[in-house]
Structures are given as C-alpha cells and as structure tokens.
Length: 209
Ligand code: HMH
Image (cartoon, rainbow, N blue to C red; front, side, top):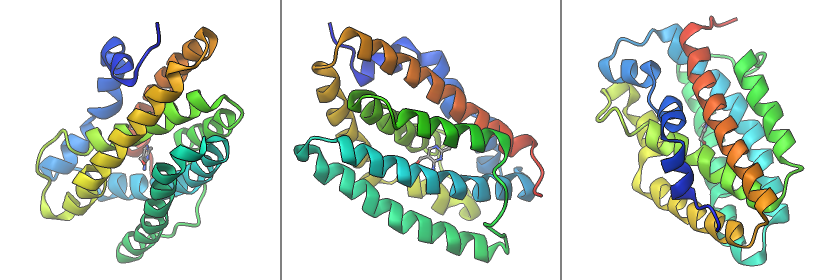
C-alpha cells in the first residue's frame, strides 16, 4: 500500500487545518490585521523564500529528468516572487536585511535537514509547502484591496495548477518508495504543518526589530 498526497491530507486533516486556517489570514480579510503584524510576515516570508529557493534547487538535483519541467517552472516563478517581495518591501519602506525570527529560522533549518532526505520525501514536502499557501490564502475568500495581490500570488489559477502537478510528481515518487520512506514522508508532512502554523503565529505575536 502506498500513501498518496490526498491520503495525507485526509488522515491529518486537523493538522492541515491548523496550518492553513489562521487568524492572521482571517484578519487580513477583515482588514483588522495590524501593519506591524503584516510587515513582520512580509519580511520574514521573503527570508523564508530565499532559503526555500535553495531547497527547490536541491530537489531539482535529485529529480528524475521527466520531473524537470515542473520543478524548473517552480524555480522560474520563485525568481519572479523574490523580485516581487523586494518591490512590496520597498513600497512599505521595510528593510529585508534583518534577522530571521525564531519560527522562520527553525523552518529554514528544517529545509536543510530535508536536503539530505530521499527524493520522494523532498518532492512531497515541496508539494505540501506550496499547497499550504495555495489553500491558506484562498480559504478566507475575497481579500480587501490592500491584501488582494498577496492572496492572488498564491491563490491564482496558474499556481493552483502548478501545485496539482507537484502532487502528481509526489504521488509517482511515493508509489515506488519503500515503507520506511513513506513513513518518513508522513512525519515530514506533519512537521511541515506545525512549521506553517508556527510561522503564522510568529507574525501575529512578533514585533519588527
Ligand atoms: C511559510 N510557506 C511559507 N511561505 C511561503 N511563501 C510558502 C509556504 C509558499 O511558497
């Protein structure tokens, strides 16, 4: 029996909800999020995406050739995303040269740990991390103008298609993975849900330095 992405979501639906439904996103929608909270998220997420880009490059290194197209597409989108973050930070007069806060730093360190794991684990992790934002930003519904482009960045149709393709790659890789690797993947999936939730928490409580 091989486990699939949709089974992971079903089996750990509570953990997944905690990762993707959060007061941070709901308060963006209601317009009650404080600037300090939003800006903390913005700067820390840029710093996260820098390390995430390195992670995706490592996943590419391990990927079978027929997975290149999807992953390279993801890397191309990350090029655009990193530049977009810089524009958003400039608009808000935020410096991106700042320290990683705890939850961000822990998540980035975890990406490095993932770099030494088997490809099936890595590609499933990549799918889960992208799906977390793809669903998270869409769940609250229409965002007010200020946050609409943030919601759209991860909620748009192209990104949704990309995440579906990642799911196919992950399911394929898992279908030939050993039981040990599948068990490892499941615990990595759960760890990602915790790290995603902690990231939202960090933005809600942390102060800009
Ligand atoms: C914390 N998780 C976090 N940041 C992101 N930008 C994504 C996932 C999606 O790419």
